[in-house]
Length: 99
Image (cartoon, helix red, strand yellow):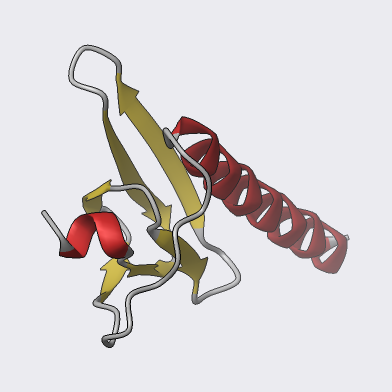
């Protein structure tokens, strides 16, 4: 039963991460922009870390137990991710690098 629970939690974490990425993509104003020619900036995020995200950023889980919360401040149109558990890499896109 414990293995079944762990499998279910792992699947739920992956589903939540996929949904978070879709929310970030849906909140962007335009279609996908290409990655810049330079090396993208990568931030490693751990449990409790919060980061502002921009159009073109990508979030990839680096542990099976990763859970993410996405927050959108409508008045300022700013978006944030908070790592609730596990770890993830935030790969910065063009909008972050050009700000």
